[in-house]
Amino acid sequence: MSFALVIQPHDVLLFRDGKPFSAGTDIRARSLFPPTPFTIQGAIRARVLFSSGVSPAAYVSGKTQEAQKLQELIGTPKDSYGKLQLWGPFLANQENDRWVRYFPLPADIVRLSGSYALLQPLKKSPWQSNLPAGLQTPWLRTPERLEEVRGWISEDELGRYLGGVAPGKVYDESEFVEREHRFGIAIERARRTVRESYLYLAEFLRLKEGVAFWVDVEGISETDLGGKTGLLQLGGEARAAYYEVQQAAPDLIPTPPNPLPDRFKVVLLTPAWFSGGWQPQGGNWGQFFYGSVRLVSAIIPRYQPIGGAYVDDRRRRGAFQKPMRRFVPAGSVYFFEHDGTASWTGRPFTETPSGEGNYGQIGFGACAIGKWNYA
Image 1 (cartoon, rainbow, N blue to C red):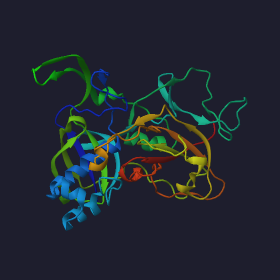
Image 2: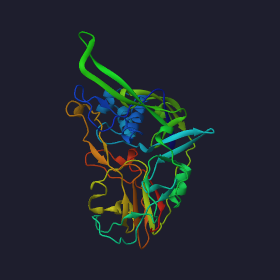
Image 3: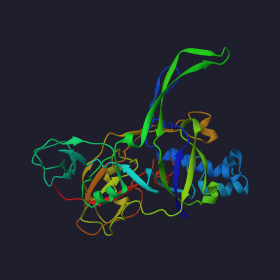
């Protein structure tokens, strides 16, 4: 069964970034926006656990029949996600009684004289560069100055972009969320007084009216969640959020053409992790495509550090924090071409570190595929 889940917060939210925040040494906690798939899968799996009636201890031990069924459904606390399959999260805004989804702006979009244009790889660079062998420079033939731009585009604009048309409008983050800073200070519990030098500043997120997170869900049913609507805990401090099942989940983006065009680009809609940093070890793209393809160019913004915390009892007794890993951020664009016939395997555009649950299963590496031509 597949459906979409719309999650709207009841309060401000806190999604910690990858920087340390220890009492007495760090004074500012920043928030990520949007949350990573780690956060959303944790909220959904916790909701299913609480709705099942199985105690957390029984779920971890897996000794009862009910606990074993639950582990088959949502996986174990250690390194699996069971039957659960997620795609997202994305932003959604309620407009004229319908949900419109928004995606991080692809990195090959630039601002040019008040409008937007697309960078394309050069056929052959007329200069020498330190790019990896075989990669070409992204380019736009114009005498005017280009400006880097960040933001979001709607699902309609994304569809046109995949067809090779630059978007007409880019939305700023401030149209969806406000960043709200709050001061706090640690307390001496025994004396009920403040602790000197423990002042801190936390950055919370307040979503605008009608804005929500959207995630596609497979492998569980709305009954497993406890109903079509309900509450779940989301992000730092377990803030309350309201969820609603959307039964009719229209296609987010155009289905990738099959076979793929001779020149096609992969756009990341959520972050991805690769064994070779920005690409698979040794440039092994064959795991994502049928047929032989070659990478021509790539536009990748600065890496996004993502960590987290283990939830199983064994690891929480010691170093419970997950390793901080560098992810390729959403919006990154990879340009490919092929000379024969190639098609997408349908696999999320990400790899998974050894010892971790499948990243692609919980929403990392969500991607869209479009076409391109040389500049």
